[in-house]
Length: 212
Ligand code: URA
Image 1 (cartoon, rainbow, N blue to C red):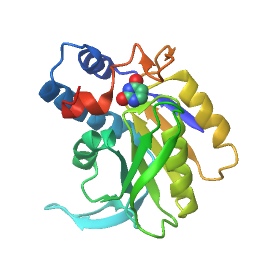
Image 2: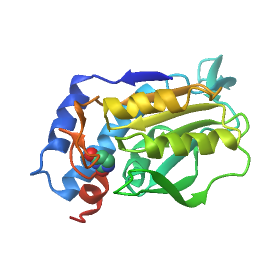
Image 3: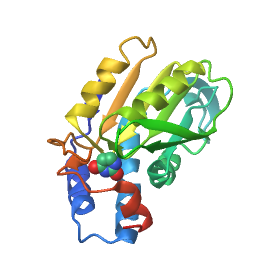
């Protein structure tokens, strides 16, 4: 598994506002959207393309188009939805599938409660959106799910990650043949005993949707 920390000053600047507990919900949502756009730029460096012939007003040339099957963007409900628009702005022709996962706050394990994905993901590049890579339980389960459906190249985009979550993904996905990449805005210090990222930004879903 590859981990790419997108340590760009604009990303760090926006993350600082996002973390600040004084940042209100509309501002939080806008910042998350802008951050995803920047992260998507990094995450799609190896998106598959094919040559495409065009005529400019001056003459013929060969450019590129996204290859088919088109990439699949998979926001993990609920908080991943707050990342969807930013991602689709960068890859408007991608298709979108949804996975609903909820974390049991006692065991911290993830279970699936919704699945709207194509049945066959053979040959698909998938971009999974989940703002917080905390224990790694949700992302491990989601990535396994996509691999079982045939996905053969998976990139998870997270705003923040905990070292514990990265280690768990690395350990739990050792037997997965498909290449897996995590692109994240920052790797924080640790998890606290409630499974929150420290310093983190609190509960991303609550802050996106104004439920406290
Ligand atoms: N989920 C969140 O929203 N925040 C955390 O810190 C950890 C998991």
